[in-house]
Image (cartoon, rainbow, N blue to C red; front, side):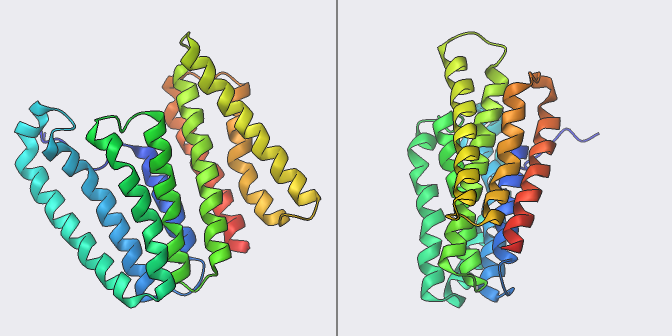
Length: 258
């Protein structure tokens, strides 16, 4: 049996948070060289994060000493691959594509203060990560030939969906604890989910929002409301994750049909 530690990203929810914006962007139009290369570069940089965390000691000094050499090699070639693919995609894209790339890059740069402080697991840092993942759809959709309006709309839908999911998971973990922080997260999650649901339904009924766009927002919102209403033990977190993937799949389908 192998005793080496896996260098794949450990945050399983992050796989879906990256996959759905990439899928949305690539399915928004033609599979251009710019769109495909930028999407592949994003995946490479994402996969480089865990070995970088191990090599830098974020995962602990003992793990760095044991797996640092292997992690540095893995991080190096993944980062190099991402840089090459990103450069090709950036060069092949239009001026609009290059401007769109600045949005997810800016979100990643905004995360640096939390990383340097070793606080990337805090709720505020995770919201910035969510913004970076959601923003990935912008350059990919524009590169595929979609309009800026669609790109920003899709990015906004994914940001709302992922933010609510992140808050719901935090609320689930804190639900069995007492204290101000637990109550604050639970109430914030429930309040935001209700506000988003009412706003989407009201805007659709008033003709200010496409019914299909409102439908795209509602599956993750409905699931978050259900999680807030029905007590779920933290040991069922994996099932919650798969339920969120199912809700996000419905969201992607609605965005695909827009």
